[in-house]
Length: 291
Image 1 (tube, rainbow, N blue to C red):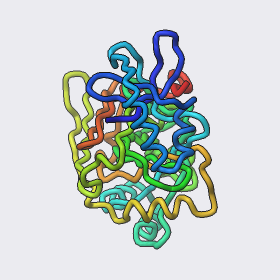
Image 2 (image 1 turned 90 degrees about the horizontal axis):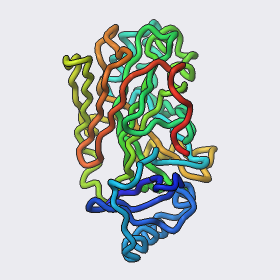
Image 3 (image 1 turned 135 degrees about the vertical axis):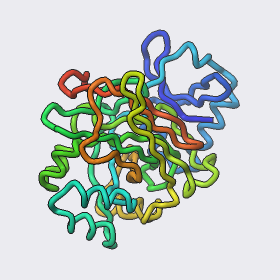
């Protein structure tokens, strides 16, 4: 069972529960409405949709980006030792990243509004003014407005690595631009994820017929817990339509060996799903895909 946004033959965006090759429409106006509800009420709406028995074949609909409305995507940085090592290697400000890894307060940053999210299959990821860009494969938490974890997504936190390395103050430009945030299309309910603290994440990069990178990590290697990150995210800020929090990466391609236009990047997380995007320069990427 998964939560999805989809468009029917008329092009109207709807929310549904996908199961066994069919989707059952949930009685809400949009995904944001669901994320305003307490977790118990959200689960009840999903159960009601399945009980109603009105099913549409998944093959007859188009899946959209999984969030809408005022829902935002935020990211957490330097949550894995490998991430700290990579930041130290690429930057002349290595002490900053070492301090963040060990500090009580995590690195949290705004990534994308819902309307700019790229779904599975759409192109994006590159800035023309970055000489080295990398995909960052991550487990993303879907949170309602009450700071409860509702579900999980696959996230590719695409990053203009050369810009962040030049100066950490450039982080917003390195992290938030057209085509920089991709999410899998199906929200897997959190109560269905058997052991979120022990999930294998895999990244592959294919360039034509050649696989130029293949790496994996496990969420067990995270320095911080999910609850810790959620607690810090909701301090001094509210998310009326919920929020997606991407929890950081433990896989980083070698310095200077980032992605190029045309590369096919695939992120897979056990029990959560997969996400594939072909790299393209931001200027050629249409803004928004969540309508």
